[in-house]
Amino acid sequence: MSKPVVTRFAPSPTGYLHIGGARTALFNWLYARGRGGKFLLRIEDTDRERSNPEATAAILQGMAWLGLDHDGEVVSQFEGADRHAAVARELLETGKAYKCFASQDEIAAFRDQAKASGKSTFYRSPWRDADAADHPDAPYVIRIKAPQDGTTVIRDEVQGDVTIRNDQLDDMILLRSDGTPVYMLAVVVDDHDMGVTHVIRGDDHLNNAARQMMIYEAMGWDVPVWAHIPLIHGADGKKLSKRHGALGAQEYQAMGYPAAGMRNYLARLGWSHGDDEFFTDAQARDWFNLDGIGKSPARFDTKKLENLCGQHIAISDDAALRNELQGYLAAADKPQLNDVQSNDLERAMYCLKDRAKTFPELLEKAHFILVSRPIEPDQKAAKALASVSDGILSELTPQLQNASWSRDDLEALLNEFAEAQDTKFGKLAGPLRAALAGRAVTPSVFDMMLILGRDETLARLTDVAG
Image (cartoon, rainbow, N blue to C red; front, top):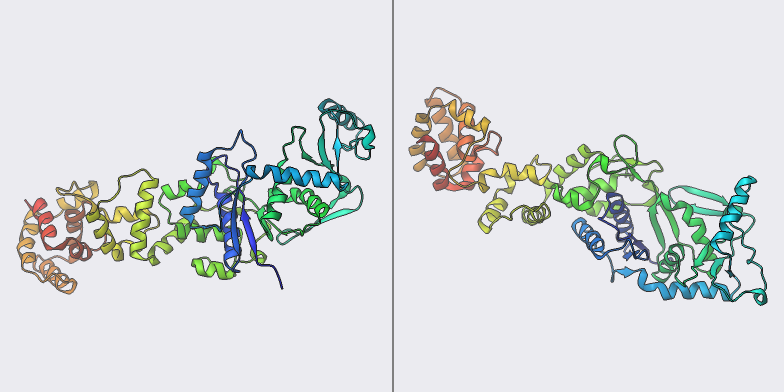
């Protein structure tokens, strides 16, 4: 019987949740959730100078926005330092590691000499096979005994088999002379102790796998399944950086992208399921596998992101959209909607969410709900109002006062009114949009009238008709 799947996301708390890290977290989340497994979160905070609580909070907020829930408590790597050091000492006791007393000057001199003679600069410590009786009373590091011949094969689910010559592996330090463990040891011990079965991470860690395998094998631990995923590039094919635009997950929230659209897009960024572009979370969990991850770097395409986000907004539950909109406003540091605006917005979602690719676009379509009288028309709307005489809107107003406030009746009335004015309804729609919303581009006139109600509609028409 195979072990239950356990994946993990292990960011360093040095800043926001990078969009590449968000995709790594998503892949781990999808793989675990699709197999009834566990998805764990570990903060790799061993670098005390660069780690800070604000960055940890930003990572947690970014994951919460993306809906990437983790199992159990958040693990702090720093808090496991004693356990990591204990493993280094166990390897020392079993002869799999050794004390190295070489000074930094001696190591630098060795490397200079090796470089000058064209030899490998991997440090070969003279203390590897030294007798304990010859050990001085001096500071030392603990180094692992790397295999000196043969090869190490990283069996990777994305990259295939990657073979490394063992003479390219140095006797890596496990424990520094001050007794603190190195990152490479901490990662292995944590992954083992957390029961991680699959390590899905960026391919910039691929070379680390061979060095980490030395520790797994020296301890007699099961090596996890490796899956090293290509990095994300910008549209120009270069590594994603600030010059390409936003890099943090929360920046995308503040720009008004819905979380479901972001999840869909990030899942497709380097992974595919046939020709499917748009899919739900449930489909992503069912379909996601390691076989579908490509070997080449994926290119971030904002237009594709926007198209997918628009499709997700269109199918979203109205109440859920209303809640996520409030989250967007908070993230973008914009004023929250009051209860009346929020309720009206939810009632109007049916005519707002089609073809809106972001929340700012949706709110622009909802301007007619959010604006207060008297409405100041924008330039295009003002032009539309100028194209029709005030008298026409003045004539329309009393007819609407006694109309039945249903879509069919309003459509019939307005079409009859346009005909009586010897024009088409299309010519009347522009001024009506301008009067009701102060905008030239809005939902349909009938939808706005139904949502605003008779009294507010008539008041707005009266304002512009004089």
